[in-house]
Picture 1: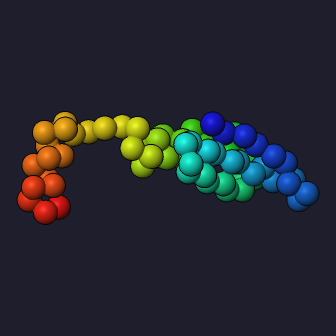
Picture 2 (picture 1 turned 90 degrees about the vertical axis):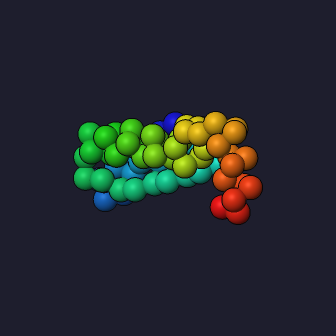
Length: 67
């Protein structure tokens, strides 16, 4: 989920948190901050393991081969 805060120098800081993963970045406009936050949230969901792209059988195969 994203949240936004205006900094003392007038820029916008975007905060994104998904599961235990967090990211933040500062932008000149709120529109740019919102765009980045939406993309970053998708990236964090993928790296948090929420997008499973293999089956349990494939996982066992990888483990048995030493990956």
